[in-house]
Length: 539
Image (tube, rainbow, N blue to C red; front, side, top):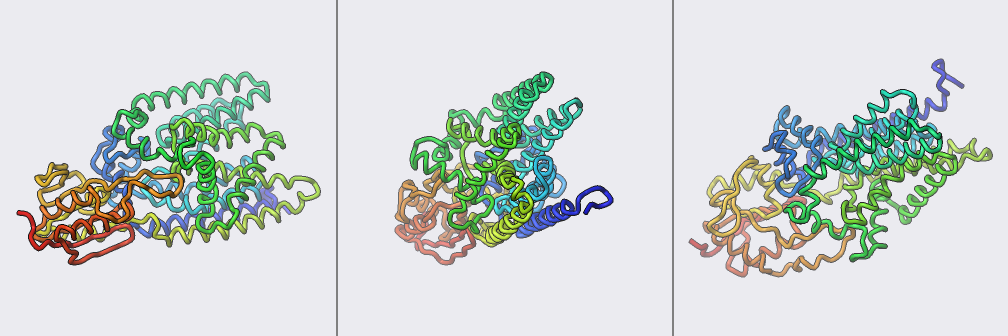
């Protein structure tokens, strides 16, 4: 049966299913946004830069060792100017990007795949627990995924209208905008160049080849300028941000360093596929199933003579792996989220394997059943992610309560990882950093900033961090305890968030050793406040 518009009734049903998934995905992202969780460290640190810098200064190296693409920072700055410095305003840009991701996936998938297969790709992206989470965080990871889809969409549009120069010009502009709005977009643009060059060779079209070379020069030159200017401090190992990033992500490069290349590669597959699309709802063997689907998808695209499309989707992932091998881009769940749409399209393409005339009649049912399973598992994973306290740092209420107590004359010590949240939630966004008479840094005479506690790097696998003391007093805890006692009158507040395991226990052990006691404590997920007193504080 066909509708008056000429659209087959079956296709219409699949289109309705896709838009229902888009609505459910949008609802999940809005639910995450409505939770209004406190900013965790990276969010708060980036928010401080956005709040206290102008548009030009946001291009310079950021404070608190943060980094983000210029266009994303400018968009965030506009939101702050319009709606004020608050979580709601800061999270609008990621939310909008997250909501637009699923409809854009349907648009792109329909350009490449049949309707039933395209719906599977939409399901994977719309209900991805990881994409849902980062649509409500002040970081560019949700926008990275959307930028990937915008690039793919314009690339396919240019390919379908080979003779028209307008689509090529739009593709050039989209690529330029992508470079300044999404750091990993350069990997996706590498896939675009591979797509165009292979298409030109297969079609023996010299015009396409020349245009591909022109775009490669344009995009490569633009990215080179950014590397030499905006991103130069990030890449150099002689700058504070460069040193920190190379140290922090040292274990997340695809190198033979511990825990070994095989273990890292396995963790990469889990982060890129299983955790991204299923989250905590993943079943045993889920990674193997998803990896198999990816391999089948690539083989099928090659088998049906869609080599350019296969390169468009796989070259970015290969480029990412190469960059991780040469220590230029680390592997972490949030940093590779830009590749989620690519993986979803490849997994969906695996369904084209059922194109043999003996099974093509039931392919729709097979794909529909698989899509239903994905929807159930991914939705379950998304709900579990929304309910989880993992990664939460609910410092807002504790910081404000501690600040009110501080206003009554009680000094406060702030952990190194708590500085950004304390500044943000106590309206000390632009307060200058001082040198304390008790040693170290301070925001005021009675407001000390603690040193970072054995700051351990992020790891691609969870392994024992030997830099973290097992709740025993350490040089760090003894030094900070003495500073707290010197600050006390005779009591003081300890505000901690973004802490390492046992950081508070280690500090409190040293406080007790020098005569202190905990008078009162309050805890929230990822944040703690202690009211400690000394029998005889230093004068």
